[in-house]
Image 1 (spheres, rainbow, N blue to C red):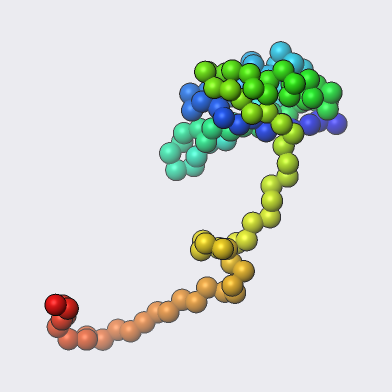
Image 2: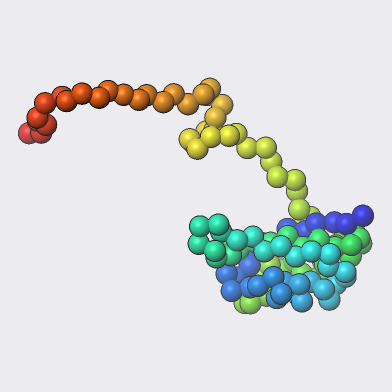
Length: 116
């Protein structure tokens, strides 16, 4: 059974290959996923590394948590499942019911009057 690790505090210069090489010394790395920002294409500073067995993952945590990679002290621990987040783009999520869209209007309201 594979075990996924969270790897945080990565340098923005670290690549998936760097990650794979650093973690392969501690067991069989099934997958190394560097999380990228969709808008900028730049690293988000964290990744997930999956090991073939829980024993290898534990060995990697002990060896790599606090270790230096690209001059950064890594944070390495067991990855937790992503928490359910409220939907919606407003602060506080969509727990306040459906978003109200007010369309409107049309017609000419006359000349614009600025406040003084």
